[in-house]
View 1 (cartoon, rainbow, N blue to C red):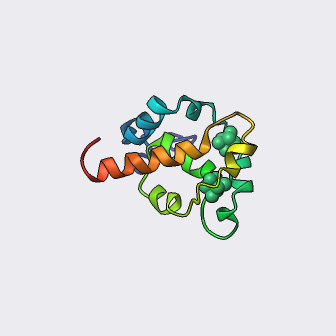
View 2: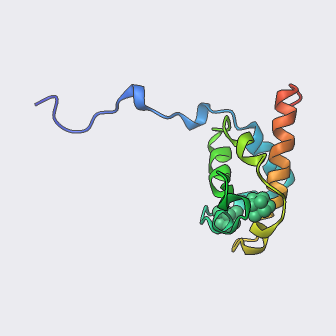
Length: 114
Ligand code: SF4
Ligand code: SF4
């Protein structure tokens, strides 16, 4: 019965520790409220741009924290910086500033300055 039970499939492992967290570190250092996000999604549910495009600040926050940042630039570019998400956030996260800082960090990474 050695094949019975649970096994870990190595080709399906996700090693978050190995991911590049430089964007997350850049934001944490400048906007500590980033750490208050509980991924509730109120920001995404209110987002004007998200109503018409694929833009979800909740998803962006999760991906940045995981270090899975290859797709976030595309979403950030759709943000109008209107600040509606900041008004509805129950944790007082400065969401607008997080988007600005994420954009800055991406630019710095692309210029090899981070
Ligand atoms: S509304 Fe605030 S706490 Fe909720 S997912 Fe957005 S940033 Fe995080
Ligand atoms: S600031 Fe950006 S993410 Fe927030 S509600 Fe406005 S368009 Fe959406």
